[in-house]
Structures are given as structure tokens and as C-alpha cells.
Length: 154
Image (cartoon, helix red, strand yellow):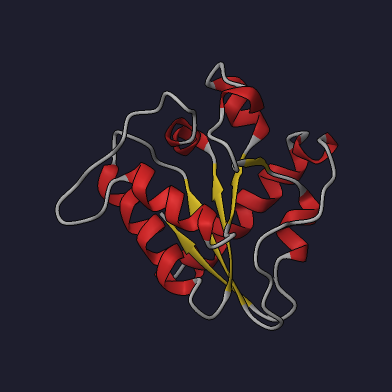
């Protein structure tokens, strides 16, 4: 299988796992991010403090893309550990810290979503999350953009 197929298959597999893992039985809500008609960018963050470069790069890309596209950032696996109120403020190189970037994204009304199953596996709940972070839902995934969706996986 070519590397191009692998890059396209990973995000698709993550969505299939998300929908088949019981994550669709959560509170339904419309996305509240700044919706821009047209194309969107779905950024998938599956790493946490063990890979600060990945996390900070994902947040940096979200901020850049949000200048003219709808953006949704989805945190799962160990990525959910970046989102609690008491989470470590990650730093790496010249990137702004994780909490600085998250605050900027929330101010821009970028949708930041946590996988409920992964939160539970991390022994966390919605009440543990920073203000403005939402629990992921199927509707949020499909409602944030009207056109094509570019996926970046970190």
C-alpha cells in the first residue's frame, strides 16, 4: 500500500473508530465555531505531553488555518490530556505554549473537541476540561464546514 493511501486511511479509520465506539451517544449540539461557508480543516491531535512538538504544531496550524477557513480540532488518545484545567502548559522550541495557543483558538471561536471515550480512559470528564472545550459529537464533525475538508493528523 502506498504511503499516500496510508495518510488518507488513518483519519478515515479514526472516524470509523469514533463512530463505532459509542461516542455518538453524547449530547448533541451544533458547533459554535466561526463557520465560514466552504472548505474546512479538521485537525486531529492524538498525542499529549509525551510529544509536545506535535501538539504545538497542531495548535499552530489551527490558528493559521482559522484566518480564512473553518477549523475543528479533535483531541483523542493521549491528546485529551492537554485539555484539562490542571494540564501541564506544554512548551517546545519557539512555539507559544499550549495554553496560550488554546486561549487564542477559543477567542477565534475555533471548535476544540475532546473524545468522550478517551477522556473516560484518562479518568477525566467534561467538568475537568478548560472552559470552552467541548465534548466531540458526530454533528460537530459534519456541521463545521460546507465544502471539502482537509485533514491534518498530529
